[in-house]
Each structure stands twice: as C-alpha cells, then as structure tokens.
Length: 95
Image (cartoon, rainbow, N blue to C red; front, side, top):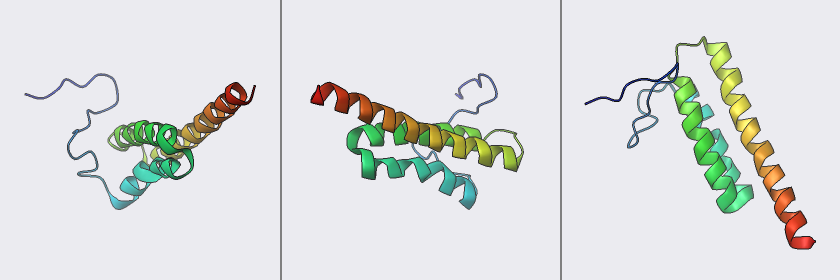
C-alpha cells in the first residue's frame, strides 16, 4: 500500500532515501550532514532534517537549476539555524 502524495513533494522511502537519485542529487542531499562535524548532536539533527528535505526536493518535477538552488538554500538555512541555536545556547550558558 503506497502513501498518498500530499502537495508537490513525493514521499521518501525511509529505508533507502537516496535510491533512484542521480549522483549530483545525492551529493546535494547529503551536504547538510556535514553539520554534524561542527554542531554535534544539534548539527546532526538539523543536518538529517535538511537531508530529508533535500531528498524530497530532488524528487519533485522542478527544473534542475531550481532544484539546485532550493537544495543549496536548505543546506544554508540549516547552517544558519545551527548558528542561531549555538548563539542562543551560548547566551543561556554564559549568562
């Protein structure tokens, strides 16, 4: 039984989310996972959410340039959120 598609984003197979993507789509999809190296657990969570969002974008009917821009935008947004979270935590912990 397949899941119904809601909106323009296709559902992602939870066991093999990168299956069926081209190499450039895979590369841009996993790019946000680099946040785990600088952000630890918070970076990993944000990176994983951004990766799943990028996989959904890669599976849409958008043109290639729009997909690239959107996927890079998601990775950038995840980085900005990580920096905001780090600044907030630093402010709370350091008074």
